[in-house]
Length: 361
Image (cartoon, rainbow, N blue to C red; front, side, top):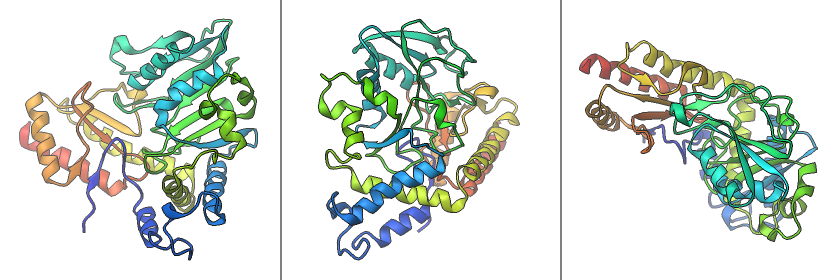
């Protein structure tokens, strides 16, 4: 069976070696006679997977012992609420930098919980660019600064982050975690839904500085308190064991190919292939993001007309390319080229784009 050219925005492509290894263990994991999803989450076999995933992530991103690694559920969407519930005090302000729909949603949830402030917003310019913010002008009662590191809908990405700020920096890294090296020590909390770069949907990774665990009010519901999950090693309730197992295998795959530095090189090469086609098309393909804010994960572009777009997507589908429709809010096209998307698939897409332009321009 030929694998589909999968450019879905999420759930997204998983590495083929991961899928193959998981399939071999589907009915009999580690000689237990059971699949991983059938094991007790208290069993020693599952414990090795659970703690092994944490250890691999800690190695890959050089996460110090000052941080807890949590495996939660509810996706990034639940983190939009958990962050202010745990970290926004009654006399404090949650500060948000708006670079797209997901940061808007994070702000909307925080507004239900406490006072907020917008430090910067790219909405007036159609979210085409990432604001340049070295030292944001923070209110004196700021609790934290929140940003979204990569914006899947608009195809923009932070290349560097605000520095020398006096409050914790919080980042939603759902769509570019593990795609490049990051200095975790610059952040108070990082959260990421797994379904882009880490594994399947169902598990959300949270990296939180231990000092922040003390901020949660005692009145907070048990399941919404980060301290609950830190104290129980993310086993307070039954975790999504299958999703965490696949996360474990994805982390193993990244280690085997050389780590995050090698992954970053691959991702830059893949992005360069598509952006070169766009830049050399004399305007036939038009990128949404400004050059300096282009995402290495989501390449967004438009064609000369809606008719061309429909024809492009129709022919792409017939050639085995899936997931190229742009988000319904902005239209156009989008190629999501996360870690697991092979470079050869990107080369094939670039060739199709060139052939389409030659036929219709």
